[in-house]
Image (cartoon, rainbow, N blue to C red; front, side):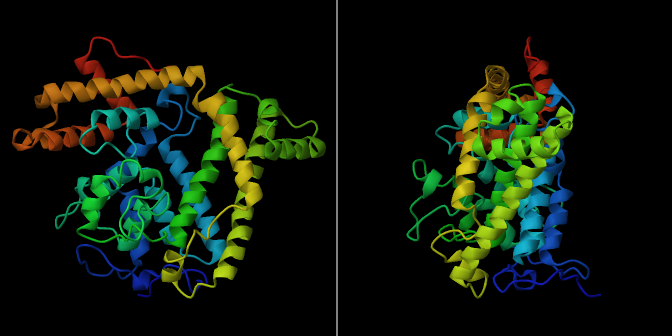
Length: 402
């Protein structure tokens, strides 16, 4: 049976037929190419299902209509496929990187990550990209022949480089890792399978990263308005949004408020996608890459916003940061959530026998750092709801996080 090859593919697109392969050799599928198999493995993983009950900005019981990590991930995947299709890139690889990009987030979003990072100070800290790599290469236990999901090199590379290259050619930590170094989990895995941390990510990985940005901007506007953290008039002070609001008002002066918000969000997504397609098309034409390797060895990313859209994106984030992410109501809940994670880590450190048997087996034989990492792995895999249930088992008072 022939494998579906999809639409026309640019010369610089990742080619599943020329993949660098998997860490553990497996027979080829007669019905799916390697990148499609990676997508399916992510979708069927335990870590992916847990995203349904992990926080974006609001905790799960703020309301049924706010985004979770899962709904955000699905939105990112849709945008990534649209961009990949328009630019002649591999849709399956773009999709799997979108599907996997948030697997490493602990409960309660960045509050949970901060708490675990502090708990692991001196033991390499906690980084959600590194945790995602640990999940797909080790912590998922579904197959008889290996730990992890045994994903392709291209998927692992794109997952690790979600925010761009990590080191210089001579191995010096780069960008956001310059201060503390590349997370140990990533450098350790690269001893087994070199993910070339010094090269640019594939064009498909670059797409997944920008799709994440686009989805964040759009749905945080939607969620912030729904939560009454600001009004449409407030965010219209951002020139990019204000222009869209004015267009809608001029064409639909009697449009009801809820539909007006959806129209704004829809147009934000559309214009950002169209901007990426236009700007990236120009950059690809200038570079003239003959294959995927030329993208990796380029001096800078090729999938990017235009300068005008970079400013628009910065304006949106500059508005949302104080009015949503640092809003007093959100900060109070996140501070309490951070305390839940901190309490759980301290409890399991002092009473490891309360860990489930699959996590406590062999615990006494581990060194101090490995014990701390195992506890962090267990907590990071929790959903928001389960973390609160566990906290209530061991502590007299558990915050409601409302």
